[in-house]
Length: 531
Image (cartoon, rainbow, N blue to C red; front, side, top):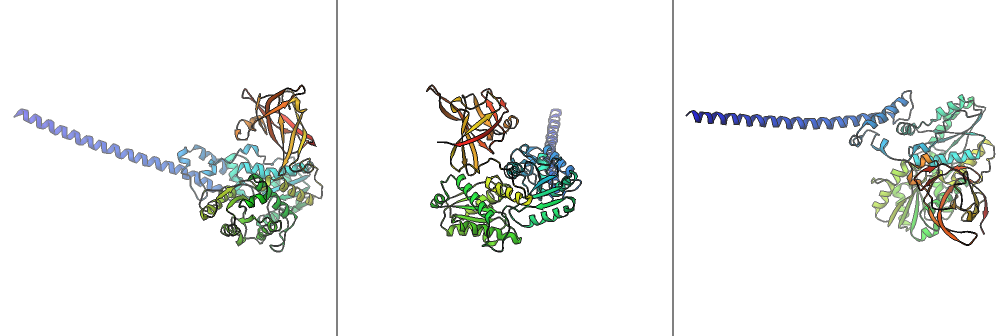
């Protein structure tokens, strides 16, 4: 009897232990689940905090708090984990605000230096947060004007505070807005101020700029605002001018060349239509887009179409452009921005993957064999830059310095030109007598040089410090056979080097076999037509 009682007691204790253990397991599971939920809440809370900080600087008005707000937003973003960054979403905020790679901002010059002098040219742009485009397009126009006016100080201002804040927060690059730039000019004692807008037309942005500048008119001895890219608006859709003709020819030539076609006519025969996408506006200047289509028609460019993101004028909407291209019988489409910069609109509204992008809408129509995108702004085109220089000249009343560029060189011809370096260790092969082959294509110069061996494996247009972090833009070698005076031959490395201007020294870094970059200064001069 005693033995049975012990068995019952043991069974009871065992059951009690099991029940206790089950309860403990349930508690642990519940605690773990609560902990995971708390962690998820904390992740979202951290992401929401960053989203709120981004939304706070996504505004068109600068305040005394802007600098601190930009710094706080970036600091909070940097503190997030990769998983938390993906959760950032606000009214304007998303992971791309800080996370999208748009190029190296360190290559850009914000042109906000003091010590301006008495004469200033203030180049005013809407702006872009896409670093590579800002350097090539806005920077391209600024450099062209600076080269034409070496006795004037060229400075920059953006009209979009939203973009200024974005660049400052993400890249710590500070760009003046119009008011800041004008205050800087006043503080520096500028007497003669010329404002050169990079805007396309006399639209709302141009009107707002004019109003802002007029408030400072009495602070300078002279203030002039130059024409935008496409000049006067004109009365109706049939009215064009020399600026519109130059731009029409230049952008079409660039699109044809970038598409790999021998000519626009050859592209048309292949069923290719070129569609240039502008921004569009409700301003009365919207007729400018219709005038650009008129200009294309007058030039006989039957396979070139002008559209706008905003669909104003109405005939420039994506739907209407698709219908026009189909009606004209073209089965292939090349999309390219009709914008000074290749920024957000070009990358997203034109070439993005969302269903409402122009690329997606053309593809969804199902009528086209191919839809290609060329992401390049107008500002990097030499002929477009020349228009801005001329407009600056008209405003200053001063003729620009004759920069030896492509004016005296013929498109498609080959010239022999001197290639001069700052080192006896880096030079053109002796068989080439210090010269390279200079060519001009679509208004841009490049020189091909043959070196002395294969010991220099890459070149970079810029400094050694920049080259190390910009491998995508390293110049790649060709294999050149050179013949020496004694009749012997040798295979060496050659390179094609872009040339911005003749008789002007520029940075060219070289990479040796041992993996070290070295800085050099080079120049190209004395072109003579090759026989």
